[in-house]
Structures are given as structure tokens and as C-alpha cells.
Length: 380
Ligand SMILES: NC(=O)c1ccc[n+]([C@@H]2O[C@H](COP(=O)([O-])OP(=O)(O)OC[C@H]3O[C@@H](n4cnc5c(N)ncnc54)[C@H](O)[C@@H]3O)[C@@H](O)[C@H]2O)c1
Ligand SMILES: O=C(O)[C@H](O)[C@H](O)COP(=O)(O)O
Image (cartoon, rainbow, N blue to C red; front, side, top):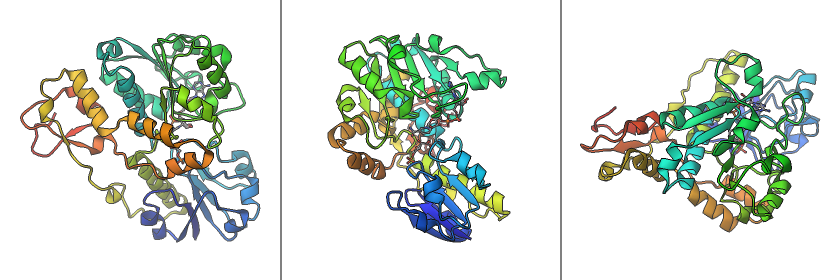
């Protein structure tokens, strides 16, 4: 079996050679000829899998993407050619939830009481929305969910309308890119909806850039009536509206899901899908490839309030302000956008970071966010 996989997939060389003749490609270099005699194509979101790319794919029997979003796959075309495809649903939900938590800590760093008394509206209650909701609830923060497709399917959770979400203190977007059908998300936040928001609110987009009309957002900010904006994703990446970057409060390069675990989980999930699809034995595990993370010294924080402890643990593990500062300094072209994604620093999820707490019993909330006590420390 000939397997072609995108080179930005961590640990691919650990998993795929076990299943066949595996070779890496670069998303900016791949052409239709590369697909000749390939049985399996494995990508991330930067490779557009469409008729043009697959025009010479004479043997292709499986396509996988190691990402949650799958809008870069032309599913209509794949289905028409009877080529099965899969995504890595939920692989990076924790990473994105942790990104949003870091955004919240940044916005409310000196107003933690205000954060605890605020309401976060989550649009899209799938893997990411659910992971975020769970963590906010663990911190005692009120949430509201909006997900008409799930509501129609009979999901028993309580849902509200998008209009109600627009009245929340924080609005966090976690929908796929959908440009047709009964629940489109393209320009869900257009000039009209943006005008419903006020400067006291915070709008976070870590799903797909096209969910916010970026031109409309630019004009809204120019007119001085915009909420605080934190953007991980942009319309038309990597050729984004660069003039928007200095105007938003947090700007990052579509890296919300780029924890080491999130990316590695995506690779591993494709390995599992391939084993199942081709009836092969799964001999490798997920944990087998991940390195240990550096422990976090936490015992000196015993004077802090519970929410201050949470803020410090989050910032010490992942501080979105650093990513935003680098992005704002370095990204002024499509090439720079691509470069900054490709060379993103290693970021670990909370659950990988042991806390060294000594004799001090830190707030329970940290463990509910996924942190764990280092060996020898009192565990919760
Ligand atoms: N920035 C990143 O690095 C990053 C990482 C992971 C995912 N994403 C993006 O976030 C999206 C969500 O990820 P996920 O893993 O939670 O996907 P998911 O499929 O598990 O959840 C998406 C949810 O959105 C809901 N939805 C669809 N249309 C809607 C609408 N019009 N209004 C409200 N809800 C709607 C769906 O019913 C579903 O429950 C992905 O599709 C991907 O595009 C971005
Ligand atoms: O949909 C997803 O899973 C994310 O957007 C993912 O993080 C994209 O990452 P990429 O494949 O572009 O590195």
C-alpha cells in the first residue's frame, strides 16, 4: 500500500511506515502527478483535496485529514468517485478550549471576579464547544450554547438563539465553515450582527475565518464601536486582510488547535482509521510517541486566590499573549503567515503538565481543568 502523507503531521513517520510504503509531501509542492499509484492520501488543512489534485489519482482508495475541520476536502467529488474519506473529529478540541481559556485570562487578568460573573456564549456545541463548556463550568462561569443542528437532532442540552448569544459578555465561535444549506456559517457575523455587539463584549474566533466578515469587522473597528476581538483564524488564509492585524486585541496564526497532543492525536486517529479500514492490527498506541512535559513549580503560589492560581497555571502553560505579540511583529505577508504556522513552538496541553505543589493543596479547579499533581505531591 502506497501512503502519501503531509509533512506537517507529527509522528507520521512513527505510525504510517508500519502500514505500508509511506512517503511525506509538502502541501505547497504537491501536484496531481504525485498522486499516481498512491492508495492512501493523508493531509492536514493546508492541502486542498479536489478534482485538480486528484485528476491523476489512479489507485486512490482512502483520504484522511488529521484535522477536525474538513472544508478543504471536496467531499462531493470524493463521494462521486467512491473514495472514502475521514477526519480526526475532536483531535484538537482540548487545545482549542485551552486557547480560549488563555484568551479569557488575558482579557480578565485583573478582573477575575468579573470573569466569574460573566456569561460565555458558545456557538457550536460539538467537540470544541463541549470541551470549552466543561472547563468554564468547572470554573463556575455561566455559559450558553447555540447549535441549531444539534438542537434539531434532539440533543438534550439547553440551547439558545444566536440573538441571545449576542447579548453574552463573551462570544466564542466553534462552528465549521458551511456555505450552504439550512445552517450556513459563512459570514454568520456580518456587518449587521457585528453592529449588535458593544465595546464591553469579547468576540473570539478560533474556528474558521470565513465565519466573520473580515472587511465588515475592519470597518466596525475603524468606527470605534467594536467589541474586544481575539482572532486565531482569518478569511482567505494565508492571504488575509493584513490591515486587520494591528486592530484586534489578540491575533494568532490559526494555531489554536496546535498543541503537540492535538496534532499528534490527529495523526494517531488517522492511523486508527487506516487500521480499521484495511483490517490491519493496531500495534501502536498514542502515548508511545509523546515526550514528558516539564513540570510546573507551583508551591510558591499558596497566597493566591483560587482564580489567581488558575490564571497563573494557565499562563505558565500557555500564554496566548506571547503568540499574539510574535504574530503582530512578524506576520505581514502570506509567506510569513505560512512560516509562522509551520514553525510554531511546541505547546503542551494542561493534562501533560505535572504541578509540583509541595505541601500546598492548590485549588481543586486546576485538576478539573486537566492539570495533575506531580508524583509525590498531594493528588486530588
Ligand atoms: N483554530 C483551530 O486550530 C481549530 C481547531 C479545531 C477546529 N477548528 C474549527 O472549529 C470547528 C469546530 O470544531 P469541532 O471539533 O467542535 O467540530 P464539531 O463538528 O465537533 O462541532 C461543530 C458544531 O457546530 C455546529 N454547527 C454547525 N452549523 C452551525 C450553525 N449554523 N450554528 C451553530 N452551530 C452550528 C454543529 O452542529 C456541531 O455540533 C471545526 O469545523 C474547525 O473548522 C479550528
Ligand atoms: O480544523 C482543524 O482541526 C484545525 O483548524 C487545525 O488545527 C488546522 O491545522 P492545520 O492543518 O492547518 O495545521
